[in-house]
Length: 182
Image 1: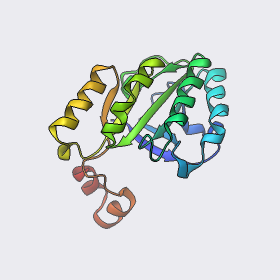
Image 2: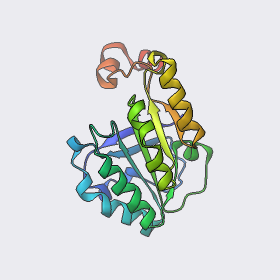
Image 3: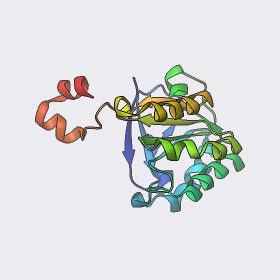
């Protein structure tokens, strides 16, 4: 099991958002959504990943909503131009050897928007992890779109069952209840 925690600061300075194959089970990724304001420093993070042979971990939510498609393409092109490999969190869990790379992921349930970006992902040979929440509430049509993403070589991973607000839920119900319910 792996955990993912979001971070907000200058991309190159977020030490825990760079993975060097140390086998850690909890990962920190940098949010690229508009509200986070981290796009202005993404180049320095991509450069660091290339220069140090690390994997930079980045994520967003809803393409065309919380993150511009142009920003997604900018990151994918930047990774390609620097010769960075694409990794998924499944690669980390499996112990895949690490070299300079990028682990790009999307959170929540913007399945239609993610699916619409398949040509863009293919253009850059990108492998993405989609952290899906509330899967049990998704209709058959959306589940087929998720299958398409998986068939393209992307990873589909759980982002909780009910997308509970962890700090509040744990405070009110305890960690054991959170682990059971989420």
